[in-house]
Length: 264
Image (tube, rainbow, N blue to C red):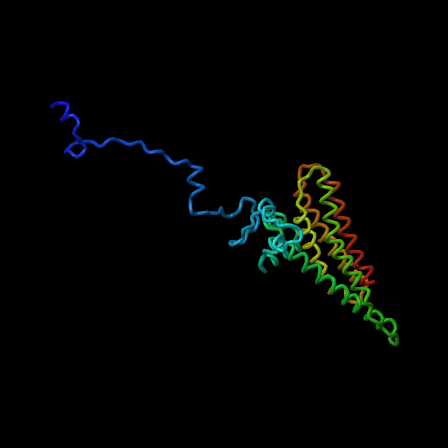
């Protein structure tokens, strides 16, 4: 009888304590992976601009979205900017004391450089011809003037060739010396550095040689300083200051070429 009563369940009796069942604590990594919410840290650690709905947050994710050279979707990430961002970067390129490299850390774009280069090509061709027209009318009133179509070819080859070839050359130089560099970031930086020559070309129409030289020297100095500051930030502490000075010279040489060839 004692064995029969001992076998009866007692969990329903008053004052009885249910048995404690050990529950397995969920793993932290498992709970994070199964969590439905995917919160983003704001602002980004790099300090760069990331659009709210953008799936791109840096070079690592850009590599994962690469679909090949012949796929249009591979290049959409570099045009994922709005007007406010482009205008802000243009202002920073004219005022080089601001940190431009920080703004393009996580989202370098090619929309601004392509737009700036195309605008500069047509402005140099049109205003260069107009400047020669004004000079010819001032010097010889009865002379016939003809539009020089070759200015368009020279402007396109110079601007696009410089904006593509020079950053690519320095990219391979940085890689050779063991410095981490992003080709898209260099293209972005060099493209925005050309914007200052757009308002400069408007001022170079003035038929005063002294005024033209003053304007082109100021524009070339500002553009060269912009390139120098951003490259110096990227190569800080690497002992590559002589290499950083060379693009400064090339940028100023471009300014002199614009003055001598298009606005002589």
